[in-house]
Image (cartoon, rainbow, N blue to C red; front, top):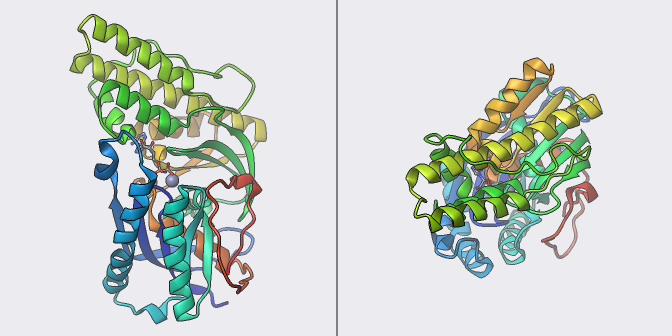
Length: 363
Ligand code: KG4
Ligand code: ZN
């Protein structure tokens, strides 16, 4: 396997159609260390947010149909922007799971079909691994070494993982009910702030007083590294009902509630990260997934670097939410690390696929 690869990445696990073409090269210590480098040659992202907005969440059938319409033109666009032809690709990486079954099938079919047509390997990527490895795209991560901790915070997942190597992920704690992103989204919906809720809550928080409303910080004082956010949503609902009954849900109340929600979620995430760092004795942590774009979370985690003598690294903000770059990058890292390529008929998608039961495979 040559040590520089042109990889096309395809992401269709939920409501973003992401395609990207990267040139990735191995660092001096791959495998088993890190040190890969990537140049993003072209990327395209189509968000389906407006399509699903009226329903307050993603409608799976609409998502699959929209991916079908968008994926081939976006892939063509990316190849053209990079000034390359299909035959120059070394591999095609696509999201194999977890996610919406129909949406995953669209990306997997195109990824496999393309790879077959040009006679190159197709590699199915775990969506969360894509998120987890994306902080490595930042040049600031050049000092990162295994093992390290990872906080994965997205719309569907909230997990603290121990990362011992590429493909070696051990779950230390996870949410027992709602994900952090879901807590942002549901709270925003209750406040009438639009979807997706995370960026809206963050925007409204800037004008809000986080102390006006008291919200629970579930499991904060418990010894576990697990999270729970369902109670937060119920508390927001109770406050909103009281405010509405008193005709008091005005813009200031919305901003104050938004600030309280953001404060509670970020406090819980920060406290559990510190606890995980202390318990494991690890000194480096990466933060990935859509909620990783939150500036308050970044500020609070940055603040513990000095006090706790740890290093916290984030994915570049525009690569925190779903995108094709992270899938191309994860595929490239596996191929550069010498992952064996198995050529065989057929392919699968895995709508439910725990990252800690991760078994990489190519075809
Ligand atoms: O990783 P992602 O794009 O998709 C999933 O795999 O789930 O994450 C989407 C989640 C949504 O819940 C969204 O509200 C949240 O990330 N999010 C944010 C921010 N940007 C996106 N949450 C808080 N603050 C943000 N700035
Ligand atoms: Zn995601």
